[in-house]
Image (cartoon, rainbow, N blue to C red; front, side, top):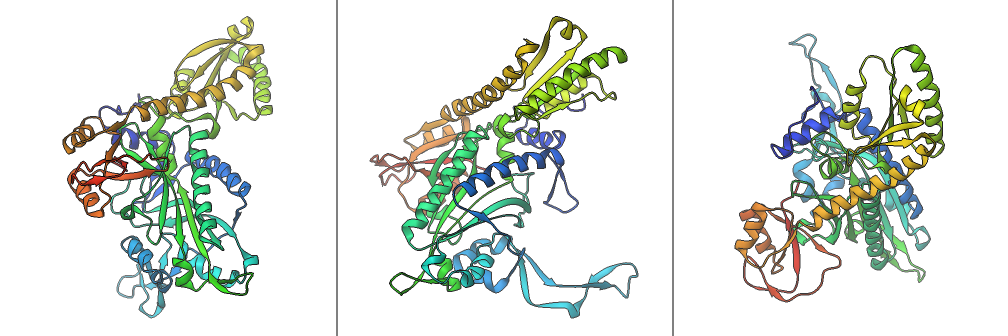
Length: 492
């Protein structure tokens, strides 16, 4: 069949790319490294966005929008930030084209239209936002300032992969200002837990919450909090980050507030974000060799109904029954499609909706109606059963919850079985090469050792878990004393 996929065991990367394309999530673009998000994939993003947006607003945040272009001088104001993003920046130098006098019909950059100051296409928005905050924040009455924006950003990646790493991607970025360091740290941790809640309860994907090492921190941050998830190939994926920025950006942009005691103080900052990379995480964590597997709580389409009939009389009978089912499902907040298109056979439709990961498929024909039943298939286990028509709505509501929980349990069992404690460098390399997953190992806490481990194994420290227990030991690489284990993994 045209939709047949390369198996995960044969070539995981090829399976992933084929599934994104054939599953209708995205397509390649004429612009190198960029992607077209197709309607099915964009609906999935909208569902994620809508849930997250409500979670942000429930925690006191409001949305705003800031310019796509950042003056180069703004980016330069915070040294660590500038250095961290310099290699990924797309730069606008001119504002006009003109017809090439030596080649009619072709366009060239107008040399007379050079910008006075070069503009950066935002790789992230701290610089442009903190320049605005300088005017917005005057006294303690203006704090905390809790703002989020939904936007696109550009990071000029050399090696790209659909959803996981593209030159342009969609995301949200929260940027908050606070009166004290304690409030800012509390905010950064709160948003990390919001992300964890979303990824676990809506994406059905267990995460480990932790902090990054200084080597892995966001450029310009004093602390980076992260959620790390494990994909089916044993590699980790950073699913979201939240940063405590200290006063770095406040000092760079001279953002001060008047305290209750009439003193001028610099404010304290956070930023936090998740992106369309979450769609890549969803695909790699749950899907199988037959196609996408999407958790019901964020699925673009939760139920599809396929009619089985011969001739217009049977079709009319099925239509009448299905119309009542559709109305009942919609009344219970369940998204449903009745696919009675005549250009494809039922078997083709079954395969197509399996490929697209629709959680529940219902088939109904004249014999089913006569027997008072419908056939219900669930995507996660591929189980089919005959369900009394009178019980259908309640059964589908049960399946929405059961499939969601089953996907989480399955991912959790895989993740937990792929966290391995090791106590030597040989054991570290063996587990990394033969099993993968997270490796819990002692590290001496130095960036030099961290760099050498990455250089020799390509594994990185994914995080120091928030709930880490102190444990005396020796570093697996250097043999020096260590006070705790950290989590290493190969990563996307």
